[in-house]
Amino acid sequence: MTTTAKPGPRERLLRAAQELTYTQGVGVGVDALLKSANVARRSLYEHFGGKDGLIAETLRRSTAEDEEQYRTTMAAAGDEPRARLLAVVDRLGVIASAPDFHGCRYLAADLALTDPDHPAHDVTRAYRRTVHGLIADELVALGHAQPGFAADQFLLLVDGLLAAGATRPDIRPAPAARALAEHIIDSGLG
Image 1 (cartoon, one colour):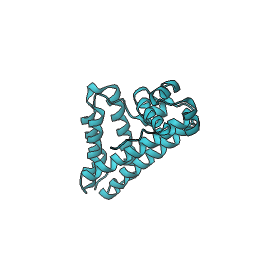
Image 2 (cartoon, one colour; image 1 turned 30 degrees about the horizontal axis):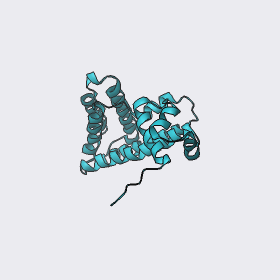
Image 3 (cartoon, helix red, strand yellow; image 1 turned 90 degrees about the vertical axis):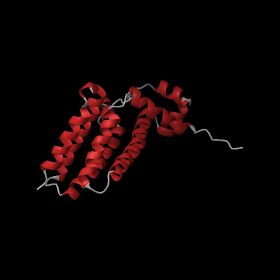
Image 4 (spheres, helix red, strand yellow; image 1 turned 135 degrees about the horizontal axis):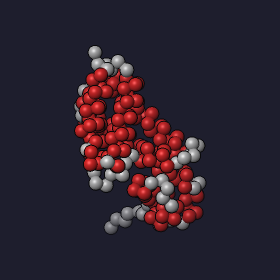
């Protein structure tokens, strides 16, 4: 007979925060987080120093998962950089059109957390730098004339696709985003 160990308070808080901050935003109350995680308030402060620390750690966990998804999507598309970049846009289009899609958790956190020194901003900036690097590397491999600038454009397109997917799904942002991605990619090729 095997028994499965119940996750500890830290893990339960992270799981609850990952779910609730995505569905309700980073403004979700501490009481709701504690109730969902089924932990005492003391656990929040022992493990994270408070809600700000929990939010930052939750975003850090999400970024690791999402960065891996970018890499997996690109790898599945093969070796050709153009196909790898377009696969990212196509995958994000599928995600953004899902009925339970609530937008980009990183953009939402940055907009909601008005304190410029909130520790979550360091996490979201690092995430964007990583994704920018992944995109720029593909553009360099493709021979794009301005890979850094094109990666900037690509990330604006990603933010727009995810924002429109959450706020205006009726406009079908995925096909428009793909056409714009093709333009960004192709405009820098000789």
